[in-house]
Length: 201
Length: 63
Image (cartoon, chains in turn brown, purple):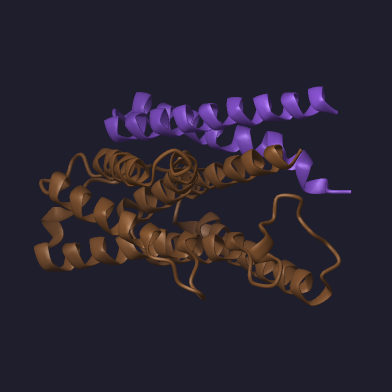
């Protein structure tokens, strides 16, 4: 059953890619306000839950890693990263960052069991594919994708005591993409990837 | 009792539904980016889903 806990954790990580469905709802009107409130509330609930877990230590996830028992869970870091991206960044930057962080980390983790070097190649290839797919309509698609994928792999490579890679893998490429947008100008940005399913009148 | 085990189907369905929504965007607005992203999400999700089910069944078999 311990092995299933490992795969459960991986699938939970991948499911975070569904957070991009945030953009299927319109930004205008009451729905726009409500979806922002929901993101903020979910993050707050996640923080409170983890605080209770750390204080009480009564409840233990079956898939929780040993080192996470006495520190903030990785899911909180992931939640903070996703909330920052959804609320503060344009969707052209947020979408590839959220999808690549949710997909690349589990893939790298399992490929690393066979070969460390291969895991970085796979991480780079997969994140490049995601960034390139998202920025397909930008004249700088290849340049931005190469830089963003490199930053994402580097942020997975470097481990910090207090900042989890789940946060860094989302925020580091997003900041670099934002800097590229500022340096190269408005023409660098691709078209919007996700348009709202419904319209507010 | 670890109630979070029962969230497993949700963790599989959520990215697949998102991918379907992205494919719908592709069909409706011709956004090829959405098709590429959705295929990537579907492939990775299904690979890990199959691996987790295999490990679950192997665990049941041993028990």
